[in-house]
Amino acid sequence: MIVNQGYRFALDPTPAQQRALVSHAGASRKAFNWALGLVKMQLDQREAERSYGIATGELTSGIRNLVRGLDAWRDSKSGKRKGPSVRFPRFKSKHRDPLSCTFTTGAIRIEADRRHVTLPRLGMLRLHESARKLARRIEAGTARVLSATVKRDGNRWFVSFACEVDKAERTPARPDAVVGVDVGVSQLAVLSTGETIANPRHLAAASRHLRRTARRLSRRIGPDRRTGQKPSKRWLRAKAELCHAHARVANRRHDGLHKLTSRLAATYGTVVVEHLNVAGMVRNRRLARAISDCGFATIRQQLTYKTVWNAGRLVVADRWYPSSKICSGCGAVKAKLPLHVRLFVCTACGMRLDRDLNASRNLAALASITGTGVAVYPQPQGWNGRGADRKIPTTGQVAVKRPPGTAPAGKTGTVPPQGETSNHELFRVH
Image 1 (spheres, rainbow, N blue to C red):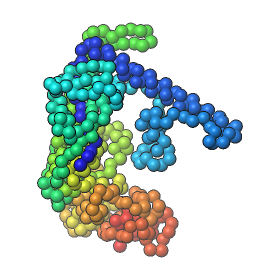
Image 2: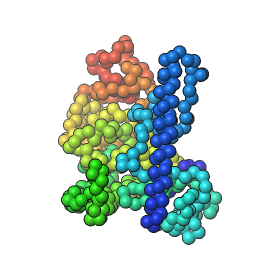
Image 3: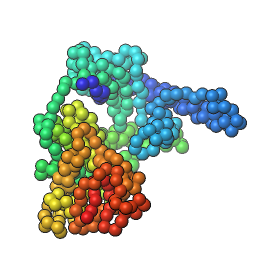
Image 4: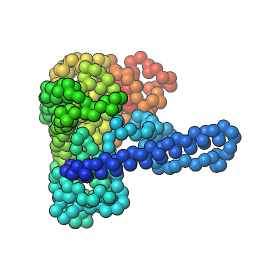
């Protein structure tokens, strides 16, 4: 199985090499800004020529494939790209954007000692860690380096190799097993098997140290672009300490999420998760920090490719699927279930269950509805033409399956009849 995979290693460059890395990143930024300025100028010229009545074929042609940002913007504008809209690329700033540059041609190799890497014009750079995993694949002919990107993250430089890797065929330990994963703040994840993964809260645990370090930094003389003031050495040391503290929190979070998603993908043949609106959830100022510390979007992102690598499948529940409000025992649906209510009590069958465990069991039940292969629930458009809405059946009503894309009998408008709902194709209440 041929997949695209990235390998990232920390660098230990000398002061001269650090200046060379900054110079290359600045040149890359300048080339980007030059090309983007030319594109914007030509786009404005095309609009002016079009207003003069010049034919489309005779308009000034712009530069194509400037960067991926132009392709993403064009696809988003035409509707080919899914997800939130992508705006037109903006000019890069040396103060705002991270320092990075990418090499696609020239000498890109890992040296025989596996502790050094050679890049075009930069020469040989020492790695902070061994690159033996990637070197072994390259020597065996199961990996091919496509490009190398150097980037400064905090106060450290990293090199990332984009590779084409021939992976061995894998199968999950339990290929016929299905697991539903309900993520949350109180518990990071609750599985339909009953297993609970505690939330480590890395940011909260390090908050005291981060506050002290940030306070120490603010009390020292920092740079000022308005007056040309240079930062003091004590400020630079405090800045490096703060960057190191934040990097440690991020590394610990990523390590835990990778271990969790790797275990799920390697164990279960089918994994079911929710499509959460994380961007909307973090608008709640009381929960924003706790939600950001969990990494909900990262869990789904990692499961997306890890299930493919392990010959499994990922089922994603629709954003409006009320997994917490459905009784996993009888299928009755609650109209409301406040967030502070942690125990699900069914008024129809009397079942009492933790709300997160109940939600994970409902997610696991979706695997039989979506069929085989990777599927997003629901696939067809709803009867109201919008795919899904926020209406939920009232308490005591039972959810049963309705043929995809069909409307309730005798109704074609945008408001469902009383006693029925158009939450999504799964439900027809009676």
